[in-house]
Each structure stands twice: as C-alpha cells, then as structure tokens.
Amino acid sequence: MSVGIFDSGLGGLTIWDAVTRALPELTVTYYGDNAHAPYGVREMDDIHALTNRAVHDMWDKGCDLVVLACNTASAAALRRMQEAGVPEGKRVLGVFVPLIEALTERNWGDNSPPREVDVQQVALFATPATVASRAFQRELAFRAIGVDVEAQACAGVVDAIEDGDMILAEALVRSHVDALRRKMPAPQAAVLGCTHYPLVQEAFQRALGDKVKLFSQADVVAASLSDYLARRPEMARGGAARMFTTGDPETVSARATQFLRRPLTFEAA
Ligand code: DGL
Image (cartoon, rainbow, N blue to C red; front, side):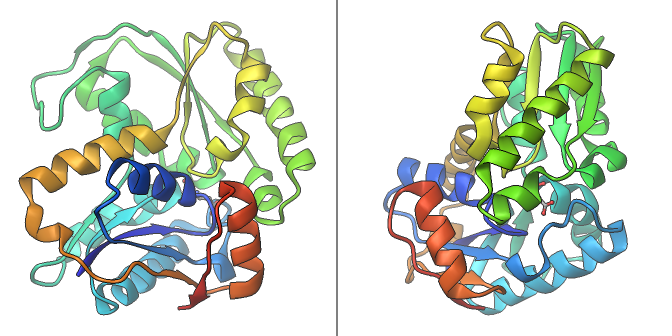
C-alpha cells in the first residue's frame, strides 16, 4: 500500500528525507537492515540474499514499490532480483540510474546512444562491494562516452556512521579523498555513490575543494521517484508510514533522530 525505502542501515534516510520533503502526501515506509550493516564489505551472494529477504519482508508488509536506497544492494542484487521475477503488482528499483542520468544530463527513459557529456574526469566514492561490482561504470557506459572514472573504495566510513562516530567518519573521508587524488589529481565531478555519504557531504566537499561538483543521490532520486509516480500513480496508494529496523529500535531511533534532526521512531521488523 505504500512506497518503501530500503537500506542496509541509516544511509537510506538521506533519500527518505528528500522523498518525504518532495512528496509530503506520499506514504513512505523505511526499512533498515541495521543488524547486518555494513553490506559494503560482504560477498555479492550474501548481499543479494540479505537484500532479497528484506525486500520480500517489505512487500509482505504492504509496500508495492521498493526503492533500494542503497548502492551496494542495487549493485549486487537489483538485476538478479528483477531477472528472478517479482510478485504481481510489486516493483523494485535502484538508485544508480537516476544518479547517472543527472550526471549525463539525460531525462528518464532517454535510451539514445551514448554521447559525450560535460564532465570527463569523475571521481566515484563508494563501498568496496559497489566499487568491485563496476556497476556504476557499466551503467555510465550505456549513456556516455569519453568519461574517465576513478573509483575509491571508502572502507570504514559506513561503520563509523552506523556507530555514530562522525569524527572518525570525517577523518576517513579526508584520507579517501587524498588516496583518490593520488590517482586522479583534478576530478571535475565527484559522485557520492553510497547513501550514507550525504551525512558527511561537507567533509567530502571541503576535502575536494569548491571547484569539484558533487553529485549526491537524495534530491536526484526524489525527483526521479516523483516522475515515476506521476506515471504510475497506483504505486502511491496511502497507508500508515512506518519505520522498521532489524537492529535495536531504540538505538536506531536515537541515531536517526540525531542525523536528520527530526524525531523518528523505529519498530522491530
Ligand atoms: N548505504 C549503502 C550504499 O548506498 C551501503 C552501505 C553499507 O552497508 O556498506 O551503498
């Protein structure tokens, strides 16, 4: 009966926040698999199994459309789940394509051949599993030519955020940006390819400098979802908005409230 937003943990809240602001009438259910976060250091099969289980749980709880607000899950599980077939009337979508459409200045569903775009040197910051999957480069190659992507696997950042240790998270961001710059000294754009990273977006921007254009998913995904729902209004039926976690609801509620600066209450999934 509602749209569901899924993440391994707290990162998808950056998307949930943008979606609930852009579409205040929409009933949005959130689901964090905090008991198993981080996903980004797991094997692909393991990420697929966890994502598949959580998404089925969300469908059973009444979500019709589930957005994987998690790049790691999108990279490891989305295509496999779609190929395996989803139940009648249910959908699952990921977050890569809207981001790449924004980067390549394309509209939804523009399937024209790949073409040259404004940026040629792009830094990608993501989890080790997302970087290893090369899913971002694959999707980009369908849409753009002549773009050089240097990917930096940002080990440790998601753990630090899930633990609420923002000082460590910011220190790790600085060191990952330094490591990226040793490989690509002057990126024109940087993609935050993990939904946890907008929570340390300022640290990324400071470390990269003002000249580097940052692409982060929250607003891009919210805009793309409102576009989708305008074409598929049956996916946006009402219902009570709820927030579920596989972790400890009290701890997760406290962290979520601290990150988004609005009172949020999770219940056990
Ligand atoms: N927030 C997730 C992403 O966008 C994953 C983080 C993790 O669990 O490692 O990739």
